[in-house]
Image 1 (spheres, rainbow, N blue to C red):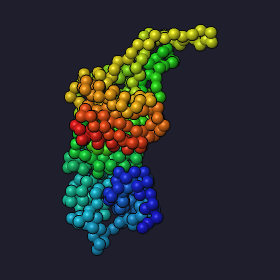
Image 2 (spheres, rainbow, N blue to C red):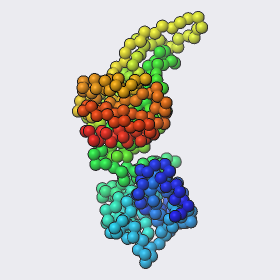
Image 3 (cartoon, rainbow, N blue to C red):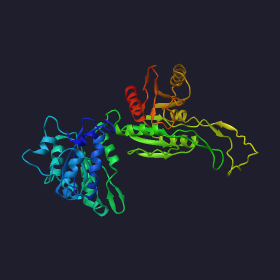
Image 4 (tube, one colour):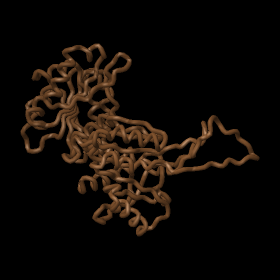
Length: 412
């Protein structure tokens, strides 16, 4: 056992038991290969590095050996390493990740040319039906060469996953290694039920203006909604967000984000996005229940002697509008209450379910320790129409997201 093995599974076990060939080419982006390998390992994967001669001139094989715990394959020998790992053997690897891929290597792969350890591994894996992910990285002028574009299109048409670079500073830049890990997780953990499903999630909180600078709002951060979006992407869904106020980063892979401020904004966003039917809608946003009848113009002057009376009226019920707009969607409604016992929560949930306002209610008591707004953990009671209740127990919000999507899958 190599000392570097001690990081395997430290972040998650999403890739536990998965074996990945990390094929490195001679782009300067190979400098990020060590970080990428270590991230894959932290999610549970075993990484087997393969290096072209050009890659070895930029990053030393000893460093890669240290990072992965596996001695890099820098040339093919009588051990026929490509067949041993990616051929028709009882236990081949699960994925070949070519990251970074140079224009030269992309062209060779696209035309079946096989003259480096990297291209030989790709040829062998392709013939065996092993998933292949190609991550091009090069100068922008090279990336925009018509034949390079044609070669990348050719790979995609043949079923390989190409992770397109970000164009900036005259370069086709290597993606963030954390984003590449998400691509790997999606490739290896995709579920047939979710593949191609359109999932719309409301996230964050709303704000209703009192005047030009003051608002009525709540403490929701959007952590739970973002965790749901991340997990849905990992399973193969097409994820779109209706995003209220939140400082949380939008997860990698979200297709569209419509930003909102007020409950009315969120209702309008739902009308627009759901004009095309969604398979699943998860109403996870904390939508405020009240707004001023007439917000003040400008800023109300501050005065110690003068009180300020505000006439509040109910906001639009966004979840009800969602059901009206998209009656065919599987609708999950979040309910945040405080100090509510199980029986009261169940009564509340069953009224909503029987009225067909939702297909599933995700209830949590935000007044309890470690499961309120902004907490990294949560405990959800999932109520279904047939009366069955699932208690997730207190766990990380990423783990709660898994439980909720599992329940959607089982009951759709």
